[in-house]
Image 1 (cartoon, one colour):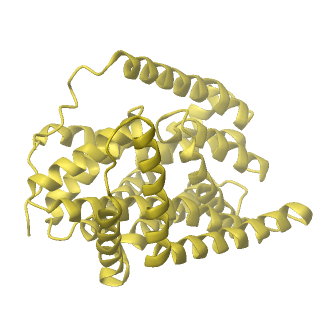
Image 2 (cartoon, one colour):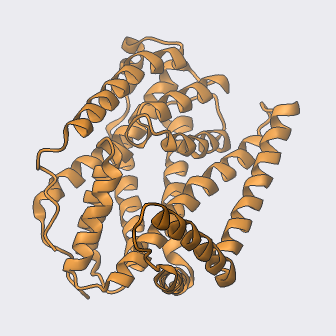
Length: 341
């Protein structure tokens, strides 16, 4: 299987969507972030440029550590792939997902291609991709649940808002537990596959096509996914969450120490955690602009200095999203598939 050509001319509709998405990102960044911060760009840029280089360096170290932790989880999803090549593949795929409109599909294609080049079986690649996707979904839900629980303990949050956050955290935990229990139950998965097979069969008969039986392959992939997910104490699932918790702690330190914002460590960490929900907004790549607007508004609502809050959020985006994406973009042309251990 050949390496996907990310430089090939995309179809017109994809170009139009990409241009609109990037234009919307620019509009959000230039217009909505200052409004959320209740401040102007001159004040925001002044706060941003006055940041100590030591803090910038520390945040880049955090980004590197997060990348290493993420890659450790990536290796667990695809057993037998060496760490170094896996780091390059994971970082390059992350660049596509983070800043390219509709880049998630390209990222998955890149990963699958390089895993096949590494000699992994199709079943292992399919199962590993499923586990990696499940870990991403788990992190997207678990981190905001943690954030809601932390924010509910804040002295600034009282009454109905605190109660709503606490209830949301509990419901989130229940949802995670329920989804996890269903996902590992072979009978439930088999029943879902049978239901899906019935729907597919009905559509096939309606359009005069032959039906394709996927229940056996689906059950086998589920078993392989569980084997991968359970290996190493479930490291493939919880390592990505650990990387995001590390970044949340760094953001909390940045807000309270570097910028001296009038928020507590737990409040700042909670804002970062809840901001991960906004990455799911499909309007821009990885929610760029939307995430920063939401986090800035939340910090200001908690009493943080307006320009300092915006600067702290933007510095996190630059060091934790844009810089790793730039490194990943440089790694895209490497082309060589990961070597086996």
